[in-house]
Amino acid sequence: MSGTNSATKQPNNRPLKESVRWLAMESVQRILFKEAFIHETVSDVLTTHSLSEADRKLLTELIYGTVQHYLTIDALLRQHVKRANRVKKWLWALLLVSLYQHYYLSQIPDYALVDEAVRITKKRGNQSLSRFTNGVLRNVLREVPNLDALYQQFQSLPWEERISQQYSLPKVWVTYFNQRFGKERTEKLAQSFNQRASMTIRISDHAIDRETEIVGALTAEGLNVEASSITPHAYQVTNGTPVHTQAFKNGELTIQDASAQLAAVALDAQPGDKVLDACAAPGGKTVQLAEKVAPNGHVISQDIQENKLNKINDNIDRMNVAKQVTVKVGDATKLSQTYAKETFDRILIDAPCSGVGLFRRKPDTKYHKSLQDLTSLQAIQKDILNDAVSVLKPGGVLVYSTCTITNEENQAVVEQLLDNHPELMITSISGRQQLLDQAQTSQGTIEILPDMFQSDGFFIARFEKEN
Ligand SMILES: C[S@@+](CC[C@H](N)C(=O)[O-])C[C@H]1O[C@@H](n2cnc3c(N)ncnc32)[C@H](O)[C@@H]1O
Image 1: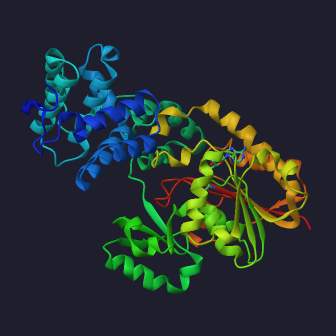
Image 2 (image 1 turned 30 degrees about the vertical axis):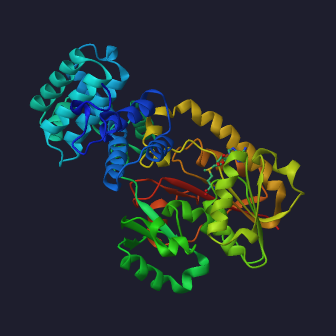
Image 3 (image 1 turned 180 degrees about the vertical axis):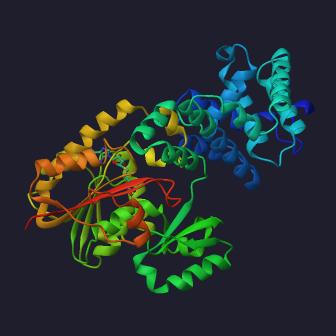
């Protein structure tokens, strides 16, 4: 009898099918085995179920943590399950979620996590499967009591295999990073993808004269904030929820990763400029640019996906910059057909990319991106850039940025652009010394690796067009 049977109810009286672990199991199954996006899945499950604040936090933690450490826990499980590929996907997801709790969340006692996994298996499957769950979990926990014991087992593996399993990074990426950066950096990168992504806020240009006051108010409202080491007017939030603060409601701050903020900083838009943000949704950088060109300048904010334009509109409205911006659908590979020659003082191409620099923030992408994606993305990036040059005024500035750290999408794209357009010149990006020391490349571009500053992996190239 579903719902009314006391054996299927949680201690807090929630039906088992509404419990945090059940919802985590279903979400993890969808993300890992049906290629659902993690941020959409989490957002869906949180909006369609009524959960307490503590349960929302735990559910988010279970989903992100299990996906982040998937290959590590999967390798462990496979050592203890004979025909692993024959186990139903929902059950595998449940075992992954259960073991994540033991190895990575210390506050949940083993008996509780085994007991709940057994009850869920009985309800979702049957009695005999629940004995399987009980047996597997007890065996694993007995034989491999902690992560140190597991890592010990990985020591005997070839290096690439060890890094892949220990840090849950597919071997194809371990090999790729090793070829690009060498072993030491690859291990640091792999490790950094397992940290929880940081949250950074940016104080609006319109409010920076009150920055100290705003930061004080955030602290008084319970947030812990630390000034970013690489980006001005940016603060990393180490505790608390910025969207609930008065400054957020007033449009005095926005949430934006520290690396991502630097792309608009590099464009250095001036009051009165006419700026094109060619790949703009959801509009984080449009807002930054609109603040810079005020009061007489203008930003054309376009994206190829019409259904994303409402996000840009929401952002410019909340941040009080709507009158500086025109939002429209547009294909950035067709800029010369859309705008007159030499229309813009500055152009930002924040291009569609593989998002490898965001493996920490969106851990599902580690498993779903392939090296083939790089070639097709590079073709689009080249098309966009080559076409953009004609609509840039002489003396104008073009910034190309990506949230990836692959040579194919970054340095190689820049090289071909310079080859095709002798009228373009790479110009240096001004910034804090720490940023330049660690992230400036020999090409004169900036490539931030995710292990450098606890911010997203990001690439920025700045060009000026001959006058
Ligand atoms: C990295 S995101 C942009 C993030 C945005 N600049 C921000 O700061 O919020 C890349 C965007 O490019 C858009 N896009 C992809 N192909 C495009 C094209 N051919 N023309 C215009 N936009 C495109 C995608 O829809 C996506 O919203």
